[in-house]
Every structure is written in C-alpha cells, then in structure tokens.
Image (cartoon, rainbow, N blue to C red):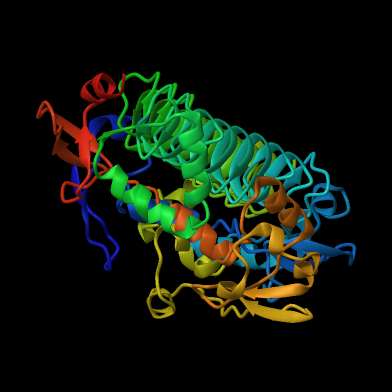
Amino acid sequence: MQLTCRNPWCKRPFEITQDNLDLIGRLSPIINNKKESIPPPPLCPDCRQQRRLAFRNARHLYRNTCGLTGAPIITNVSPDKPYPVYAREAWLGDGWDAGSYALERGSGGFFSQVGELFRRVPRWGNYIENCENCDFCINSYGGKDGYLVVSAGDFQRCLYSQRVFKSFECADCTNLLQAELCYECLDSEELHTCTALQNCKQCQRCDFCLDCSSCQDCLLCVGLRRKQYCVRNKQCTPEEYAKLRSDLLRSPATLRAELTRIALSVPHQANHIVACEGVTGDFLTHDKGVSQSFFVSNSEDAAEVYDSDHATSCYSVSDADYYTECYEVGSAAWINHSAFCDNSIHLTDCYGCSTCSNCDHCFGCIGLKRKQYCILNKQFTKEEYEKRVPQIIDQMRAAGEWGEFFPIAISPFAYNESVAQEYFPLTKKEVEKRGWQWREEKDEMPKVSKVIPAAQLPNAIDEIPDDILNWAIECEATKRPFKIIKQELEFCRKMKLPIPHFHPDERYRRRMELRNPRKLWKRECAKCNKEIETTYAPERPETVYCEECYLKEVY
C-alpha cells in the first residue's frame, strides 16, 4: 500500500507492506470479544520515529527538588516544568497515588485530556536501578561510579557515554559491549585500551581504526582482520610501529580526517548483519524476519525497530527491550500486546499510557503503578472498562486520533531537550511554527578560578596541572564553558590522552556524525554489480560491496 505522509512539512511517500498490515491487525486490541482495528499509519516512518523520540530526554540533566519529600535531586526534568517531579524512590513508594489525578472523560479531544494528565501527574525524576554513585546518569542499571552515562548497564567508572554495557573505565563512547579503557569509540565490542575506534571487534591497543576485527597495535587502519603492528593498512615491524605511533599521536586532531581519507581507498560492507535470517537494515544481530530496522538484536517478526533488544512481533518501536506484540511504543521495557505507550515498564494490554509500571488493561493513563482497568487514571470495573473503551475509540476514530501515538505538542519535554532534536534537528522557528515547545538554554559560567580557551591547553597530558579541576574550558567549536572532573583527569592521565577541547555535547554530536543515516538506498555492489540495500547513499564516494564480495576481500 502506497501512502503519503500526512504532515504538511513532510508529505513524503512511503509504503506499508501486507506484512506490516497483518502485524498491525494482530496488534489491534480485542475488547469484550470485539477487535478494535488499528488503521494504517498516516505518518511516514521518520515522522513516527521523530514523534516517539520527542517524548524522551536522554541527555539534559537539571538540579531540581523532589515534589514529595523536598529533597534535592538530579533529574532530566527542568524546574520550570508545570508538573511535579519525584525522586525515584518517592515515585515508586506508596506515599502518593496517580489515581488521585484522574479525569472524567469529557466531550473534547482525547489527547487534550491525556495532555492535561501529562501536565498534572508527577513524573519520576530519573530512572536508575541498582546503581552506586551514579547520580548524574540517566536510564541506566547496574552501574558504579558513573558520570553522565545514558541508557547503559553493568558498567563501572564510565564517563560521558551512551549505551555502554558490561564495560569498565570508558569515556566519550557510544554503543559499546564488553569494553575496557576505551576513549571515543563507537558501535564496537570486546575492546581493550583503544581510542577512536568505530565498528570494530576484539581489538586491543588500537587507535583511529574503522571496521577492524581481531587486531592488535594498529593505527589508522580500515577493514583489517587478525593483524598486528599496522599503520595506514601497511605492515610494520614492532619498532617501526612504535615510532610511527609516537609521532602520529602528537597531533591527534588531524588523525580523524586522515582516517576518513584512508576509508575512501578500501571497500565497505553494505550492511553490518550477524547471524540473521530474512532481515533488512543495519547493525542487526541474531534477528529473524526483521525489516527496515537499525541497531537491533535478538528480535523476530518485526519492522521499523530502532535501538532495541528482544522485540518480537513489533512494528514501529524505539528503545525497546523485551517487547512482544507492540506498536508505536518507545523507551520502555517488558511490554506485551500494547500500543502508543512510552517510558513504562511491565505493561500488558495498555494503550496510550506513559510512565506507568506493572499495569494491565489501562487506557490513556499517566504514572499509574500496579493498576488495571483504568481510563484517564480513573479506576473502573472490568465490565465498565470494556464498555467505555470501545466508546472512546469510536470518538477517537471520528476525531482522527485512533491509531496514533501522543502528539508532540503534549510532550512533557521541549523539542530541543528531546532525543528527536538529535536525529531530526530543527530550528526554534520551525519548532514553534509546528506548535511544539522550545526551551531557551543558557550555560551558566561555573564558579572557577580561571577560564581558558581550549586552544591554549597544553597538548601533553603531563603538562596539565591538578589545578585544571578549578578551571573552566571554553569549547573550541561552540565557545560553551565546561569543566574537567577529577575522574576524567585521572582517565586522561592513565590513557596518556590530551584534555578534551570540546564541550561534552559537542563531542557527542561529532561522534554521532560518524554514523551513516538510518535509511536504506538501493545501489549496486561495486564488484559483482548485484543490487544491494545499504545506508551508503548512491552519490557517496565510498566503494561498497555486497556481503559475499566483502568477505572475500577481507579474509
């Protein structure tokens, strides 16, 4: 089925396959033995993803006060928001009941009432579980001594990183598994003592490498397998390697551009797919029947899935862990047969719910815990619930609301606070024209003894005094001030790294720019001319091979 995106600023054509329609049909709720069919989505995949991400703030932290206990807290909710914010322990406790904010269903739009609940019901300040000394981390579990770590698990002494798992002492890294002593590494696993690696596996003591596997002591290399002592993809003796490495790392700022030039001289694999069957997308591992998806593992019978693990029979979901039969769900875990929900855990047969936990058969609810058969946070009997929900769905159909995720206009976060701004950046003017929120942000100058432009920092870490912990550094690109914390200084000294010249947000932005877009194009394998789907657009200069040709090339 060919459709056109309903958003007036998009109007992009997109396709809904029969498999997608069948999946939506299976995910439609059955209430009182009647299926309430969900219609085909009116928005294209990108606009749907953008809408879900607009309800997730993963990088902005603020000092706030718990609305229940009065205790100071670190939270991803700014103090100027209209709704109360509770510390995690207070939110999960029995000292309050989200049912006290219940609304009677009125004659107006259903989403307007859900928006009212968003503005009234307390939110948890930050979700961190089984963590120690991780007050400045977000949506993470099993961490110890972390600082500004996001959506991570089982980590220790990590800094300024996202989606790092089973990792120790890593800084400024994104999407790592089983890594130790790594800096500015991206989309890699099983690394030890590495700097600036992307899409690498089982490497040790490597710097500025791309798509290398089982390598040791390599620098400025692309596409190598089981190599040691290589520089610019050329074999060296250990003595030659040591001298070249010492010389080159004196000017690390120039190495990223050189690695990009080297990457143009070697072939690239069209997709990164491991142990999968019948899949399309990129960075897929142990998946079956997964299409148009990115950074997904251990999933089956799913489409348009992003940054997820164990998603089964799901369509159009993001940041999903252990989802079964879900549609348009984001930033949640252990969700079963539910749709249009976000930021929740342990839900079954829930629709249009947010920040709920351990609930089933709830409709349009915010902040509920251990509840069932609720509508707009109001408790009903099973019989009343099954009578009222179909009536509400009929009203939503008439208003064009049924089958939709929450509109961005009612998000509890400003657009530029949300993850949507990272993947779908907009200007303040564009955001406000669409009727969405924008939050003016201004960095406060830290109380420091000295402010120094980053360009004036010594290159050698041995020349950096302990007193730098009392300085503010002016970002070389954005001029935003930032500080070096003690743990970061210790890490740089241990790894023999120069002090960062860029603000943490700028470092993150530059890392994410290294990734290809989450979009597939058709082009031909540069070697066998077979048609392939890849994240390398046809006009890009890289040489791209199909999997078969690529494996023959590198092995």
